[in-house]
Length: 101
Image 1 (tube, rainbow, N blue to C red):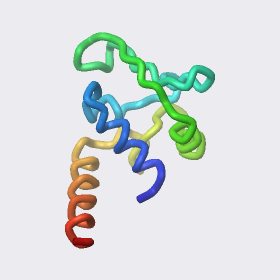
Image 2: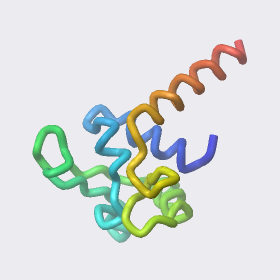
Image 3: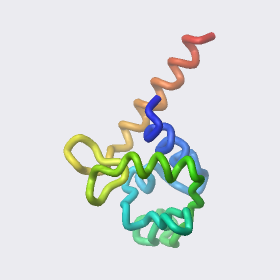
């Protein structure tokens, strides 16, 4: 699996984030110096800001993923990925695991 997909999956797996928050991540929310992702209250289901610590590996993947001027995880049309895209990824991961057994 591509490193950026793995990162997106790991961020989405956080119990405090819902998929739409991860898929709508914007570069302006990433604090490269403090190694955090600051999700504003306006994008959080809880309507409270949320701060997600980012590892050096996560920052490296994000750095390599830069390509869209605003979104960290855009689709081919430059919009945030749909939640169904992550469901499909999850289904393919499960199928791959079952195939290995």
